[in-house]
Image 1 (cartoon, rainbow, N blue to C red):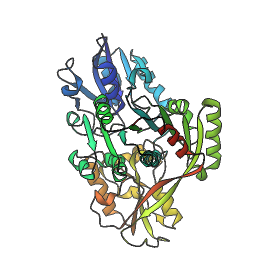
Image 2 (cartoon, rainbow, N blue to C red):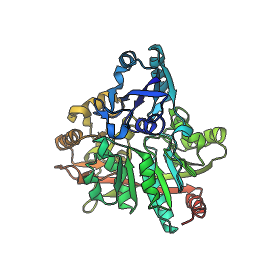
Image 3 (cartoon, rainbow, N blue to C red):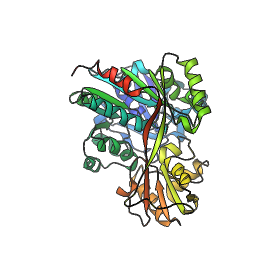
Image 4 (cartoon, one colour):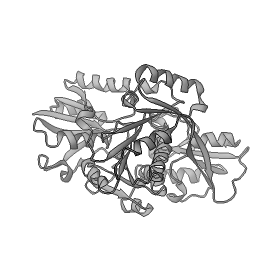
Length: 440
């Protein structure tokens, strides 16, 4: 048997193990590594999920010990299993593995996509923060208006006790409390729940698929972190970001999504027309069969009373954590809204504490926004402390969830969300034609 080390970030890595390695007698998985997400190293993939071949479970190590692990565990092959990384970064990791004597590989769709008995629409992206969530919500509304029952299956975010997170079903906001969801998880589930759509997530996606098939006419795969789908799609929609043109050919596995898409949705087109044109050009060269649709994201502010005048006011801007950290964006919806309204963004770094302070060191491009990192209770407390310390008159949040529901603050918070606006192309027509192929 070949000794395998799976390089991951608590998502794709577990799925690859479950569907390809768990019962494969040719391989012995000696460990996982962890990166991107704080606090997941030092755990074990539990025996309840690992199966009979791994009665003690499988240890999860920090990726920064890669060379030592390859030597100590006598690793034959490292399998890269996470997403939203540049091609350059992938090959640096490959070089580290090869220099340590191990082979380096990636698993593809044939080996990792599960086939559903129901029709599947997947919504993925070329980069984190491209604006995929409003697209997913729009598509579920179209399907329901057509008379179909749909269930959203979300890319995994298992940051707690893995054995208790194998299959998670969210129908009400209270279900997020039941599963002790972090801010990061709530950001991805809450909007779907408010939209009246049941959400599944977890660790074991074969079991999740069986459950979802029992209550849906169509399954909507909501891909996170620009990963490729876990389920084989019958219609694959991929969102590209006009603010980051060229990234659709420079990041893994965003380029894979770009090349296999049935529909490429060029988002934020009005914000960077030259960028949108570059994406269209790249699509014509690399995936000419894909239908192209141009869209924008329209800002909608939410406040407890009448929206205050922000011109000249000092504002703290809080943005979606993954988008502005490993997603590479300098800002998001909150910043755009603040500048539009004449607000004066403060520098939040001087108020940073704990792991969020370390995040600023890791992501020096962040100077005017506070990343809403909430992968743990500790980080949520740090976020709350920073907001309460900040010397500002208002807080503007561009996070997918309303932070007022999860933190206690002494500041007035304006929550800004996006809704999808189509410029050209007919997303509804494409989805409705697809819906006509579904037998209830």
